[in-house]
Length: 204
Length: 289
Image (cartoon, rainbow over all chains, first blue to last red; front, top):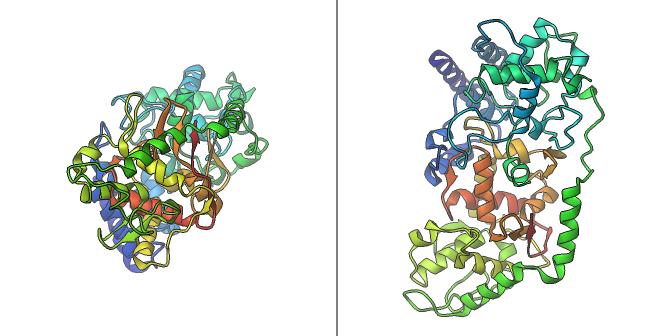
């Protein structure tokens, strides 16, 4: 992980020289200085959250459109970092997944620290047809398994996508739920089941 | 309800186009074709109910009670220096003048050498002119169920005197322009455990968190949605809250640390947002759910 951050940082250094500025220059520097000057820790929201990691830095510096050679390399790094279940089983309990998908709690300064946190899924995605209050920041996932099948490859793909969305799209708006420790193995398995289990209402 | 609206507002993220672009799975169909397009214009029952309530409340807007208190506090000699804001505070339109001041802020104030939004400016006056202590004001800056700070009344009073006026942030002033550009860069800055920026939720058109529509703050109409109704009487909890409060709540949901009260950070972001709403009509202090 340290290696990856170093890699990202060196790429960023290259970028700074090689790329024209995207809505930044002095203003980006001033924005960061302002965050550091004018924000304070509260609850679990510590001040170190203001610092960009390597991936955030690349996305921020390129307006979320990194050059392809950097995106491919860093996506591969993120994918290599995914920790799959030791028993190889990706499919958990879709009912538990549905419950988790409903919750938007976790990680704010007003939330109690600790796990597990909510999956936040319905905030952005249409999923089960029974839930009509869903967001539209992400694509609809209704009938996800019905349309794509429930093969081991698809299961692995969905697991890795939830674990770290950036492994498939470097500057995706979706959090890296497994990577940052928001969701553990059981939670991700349950969400995979919500999307892929033929018994899940998603696929009815 | 509270969780849906508040917890959801800036909450989550996206598989933004990611499922639709997986070269490793050529057999997969783009996710966007899987189901009918989401009904962005459709309003849920809660929204309809709220709009009905807001329409009924228009004749007796609870914000007006706070305006009245604020007017009294504006005109009364107060603080260690025993002066009134009416005789000492310049909101950019001349000492004591409140007419149209709210829609022309944030602006640059040479006496403070800072770009200030309305709330920040009034706090500055309370400290510099009346002798109140900044740390005491900043310790409890926002209302709760049992308490409404004076500053909230004062902001509401000032905002009420810009009712039905056009937003006119002086973006041609180089200091204001610098604040605007910095605020714009801050809005794009992704960080924190979930990689969110302001723009994650508020950077494009037609998005929702759950059923809550998300205004695109980079457009005039979208920015105005972020400005309209603040300061506002919030039905959730029954409290009067200011635009500064709302900005802080966005950062809470962004999983960021907390912005300091009446800081440059909030002034810059408000300059960006309110500046984008230039030319739109501000309807005065409002009601929020």
